[in-house]
Length: 172
Image 1 (spheres, one colour):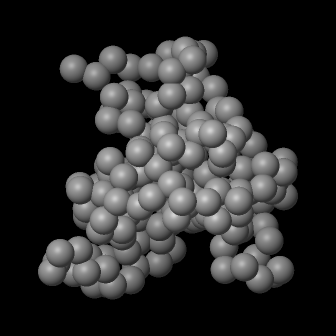
Image 2 (cartoon, rainbow, N blue to C red):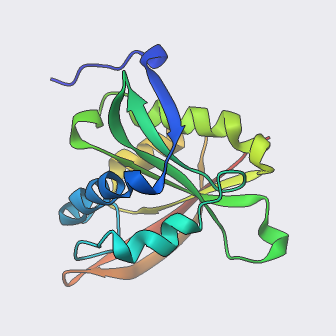
């Protein structure tokens, strides 16, 4: 049985390159479920170096989610579409360790992100979620994200075609 988290025991810490091993391990642990990422094989730390470098702590941070000094996952913002007119829009990525799932940690992290978003000059947050990933869809929708897009059968997951749902929320 999962133990609910006490919100006062959680914090976000800016990630450093030294954290990349555990960030990649958390990401790779999600691949076999075929629920959260379109990667079909594990990625390497070296392959994620450019991705890490693209996370500017003043504009598009990458945070560790920490509970009582224990790493529980990561949360990041990435620029959307890479054109100046979209500077106020960011894609949210949230990956949790199995021990952290189902305990309210993801909910806490998204609420914390929505609170901080205006400090990063953001007015819109986006999530790209597989249509069969009901836990993530429910989480985002309970926090006010709305389905803004539906791309049917765009991801080939081991011969099974999966939908991609785009959810969005205005913040700030």
